[in-house]
Length: 286
Length: 329
Image (cartoon, rainbow over all chains, first blue to last red; front, side):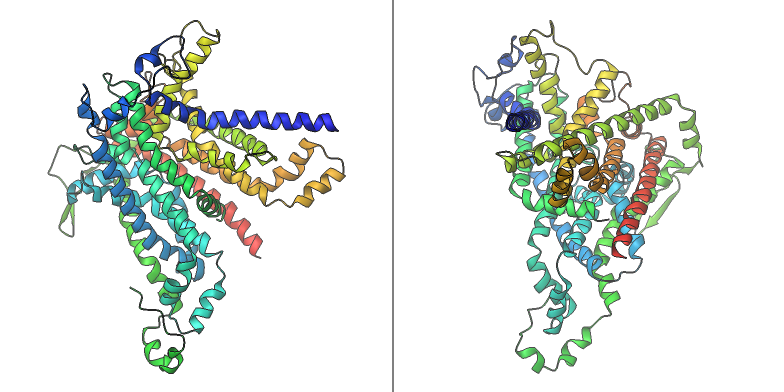
């Protein structure tokens, strides 16, 4: 029995090590390349531990030193700000209107409940790209092309259904007795929701808020197509654009990629407990 | 929006009928009111554009012509273009590129769903074992999943590139290859790289779902099986797998949809090439609409995918809702 158990333990640790390397190895390598000189990356044999470390790539990306492709790099910070504005605005919209809808679905008989829940499910599975031609023409007619408002509207299309769903699942875990006793105590229904139920819904709000923010921060295709004018787009299209240019070293692109990844990774790791709970509940419950 | 919390002592005295009842809505209308804002926004940013795109797939969309049939909505002129019936769809069905892309998509989705399920389940089985650092591993699972697909593409370029890729560097150092390999040069290899890179991004989430499912399996089931002399694989087959059926079905549906819709990684890694050997349906539709600016045929292609997603959503709802009803009954 004993040696068999030891073999089992060794196998588990070996597999865990392989999985860990596979999960974070590429991300760590992105960081390593971002603090390396391109000439060391091109060297053969390749040194996995960089012989020289430099923060020049970050300085170039942040516009602190001049270099030959600084026009491209100069877009990073403004587009980062755009990303932040859009993601924050969509998150607020989602938390306000998505949450109230989720509460209604969790608690009350709603007209056309089954049908509208199915419509939400379908919207979740809908290819966003099929909507872009319509956005393209409609936003042009409305003057919303190349604006952050346009992006905020477009991003609600794929975030709002998720928020309603996650919040519905979350409110279903809160006992209805809480609302009922609030009603008995003299609250009306809106007050019961706003003053009694919402304050204990923190984990659900954090889960859907963080998830919404992450989706918007990472979105690429919509911003790439709709906001093409200089200074109006978000971070992912700018980085993808740098990737297409031959005169920019990979190490510089890696630095901007790492900068863009960091906020989302920190957000998700910071709120992981709530996010995993909220997302598993939201995706499992029909 | 909401007023101050009612004073618990004072409210019964303050004739409840006078203040509260005047604003009391029926439960149904209150619920409808709560849903209304979300409903309006979703109609505005999903349903209406969806219908407009559908219309475009039946039209000859000329983006350069400013005149032509149009509809005025609240003072905004929305061009309608010339209606051409099912012409865009008929052209698609006659286009060998469309069929090529369709079969490629079928391969892509099949390989992606298979890899995601197998790797996701494999990781879940390992991470469910007892070992030091289990919580850390669960956090690490979130890293690939939280990255933007642009960054996912970038960091795999760093691993696979023919000039500076780390994998090439490691293989070369180990003496396994004589010269660096260009993983994205041949079409079939590029397609498989796309599948695996996307799987790297998505499988960790499947693992999280499966781990959550495993936690809800009662421990007694395992100890009972052990008493009966069931080995590891028997316990997996007869206890773990049946309990995870719902979760696996969910993963199957979600990854099928995601596989069909994958676009951003293709943009960053291959642009549908070499040639058109990594052109899936969604890339073909995207390319037709936004690189060649043929909105009519482009929306027609994208609508064939949309239709497929609708069918999957119906199947999913049928299965899941029936299960929920069975549980509630």
